[in-house]
Image (cartoon, rainbow, N blue to C red; front, top):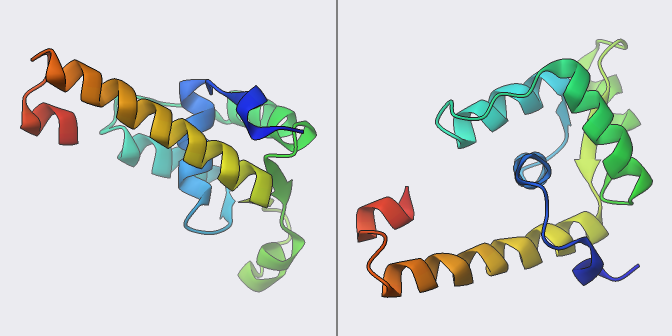
Length: 117
């Protein structure tokens, strides 16, 4: 599958993939990371998160990580990690968003501070 066929990403999918670029995470860790990345503006309830992850697994963006679960010692937790394809997709999306931000900045819609967070 071609990574460009996945673009543009749903904003929540983008945040999940961003969170996974630092390594495998379990569901609750993803929820907390998404909240932190978005400054608390985006909240994902666990039921929706697991539906998103199931869809992202089907698309080849994410896989369940059995190694991380064993390392944690809690067999009930499921860990997820980004695939090489998922990393390619999130990289393309980050570039697309950067280009859009540059256009907004060139039209004086964003100050430098607003554009960087």
